[in-house]
Length: 175
Image 1 (cartoon, rainbow, N blue to C red):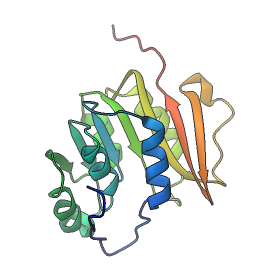
Image 2: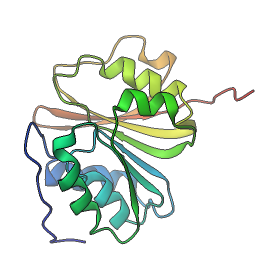
Image 3: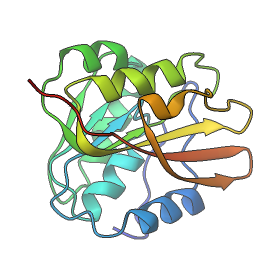
Image 4: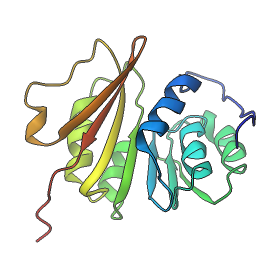
């Protein structure tokens, strides 16, 4: 889907930089047939990128009603259907029961609960053993010292003031 223009919704938005998006997806390698979840989806550009690279199923979650029309317009460009959920990410994490292979979480930089949210994702039904959580954060919002108790840090990519953490979900006891 290279070269397609996507719309940007009104309100507060921090669209994923092209360079960052390309680098992150290059690091993921072949994601064909991998389930993909885009949390705090905004314009839907990350979900659209995942779908264009063969991820399926793809789901996008966004709570801001001002972004709804733009998100729906953008995901309509996808080669596969992207399921859009319009609710808070916190509520979605509590209610959804299906796991995803890859979860991209891009909360607003001012969101104060990034690390608690990452731990909640790891403990939820959204993440299976081996799922990959990508957390986009600002450079100043460092991970807690005890992060390795719930998530395995596999890598980090820095883009100016932005960092994407590559976090693996460890084995889960599903009994």
